[in-house]
Image (cartoon, rainbow, N blue to C red; front, side):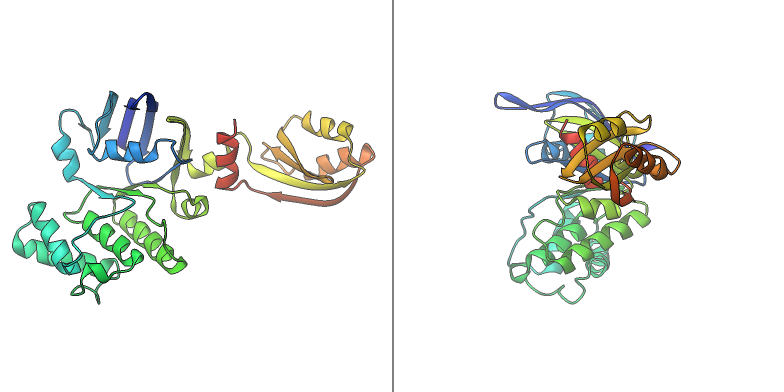
Length: 308
């Protein structure tokens, strides 16, 4: 698949420390790429650099086959940005706000009006077009920010914590808008702390830690990491010997003792290994009272990657 965004060896220093350290990532065209990382990991810095609001100290950025260093203006024209917090003119109406920025983008008066009305309807603000933005709720302003970012049909939409501070209804609306944009051919890079939300909408994920990209790929592959499932076993008469024997099984990647009698076993196998695990435990004096297998969640994968 064609790459929409590619960075190579990005470094960015603020004051005395590097916020980004040798960051290289690849966002496939047509994907919804979830960008994960703890506070201070460098997500917002990366987004500012990709959208042309900041310049890296070192490294290369290629977006839609254009070099940011050589063709920054062209790249900015195909990117729609939704920052964490958007500033609006509170005395303007939503339609006036949209028209104003559409004109700044170079649209004619008729094009600005047409696109503004279509996009406000698209994000569910068709009944608020003539209301002043100062009266809008946080969720309404977030939807207005998305509508503004979609002016002039961008090829790439970048969203920084788009559901932060929204109620459940607002979160659902924003996720639906993201899916619709992607269905219309827009490549999306979205940063969020909400792993469950990203798991629901993303096709690809990159995990950032202390300014470095520690893993990226299709979300199914990321969720597997080195394991394709976790088996939770409840064992009476648990012993260190039993745990050691389980850990030495060929397909076992890791084990974690969650409670006194509960063992989580991370496995990498295309076949059902539960009967073999059950037999090993019973043959060595354990009594199995629970045995459940679940696929790894994105949260499991994220924690596994960032705890190392």
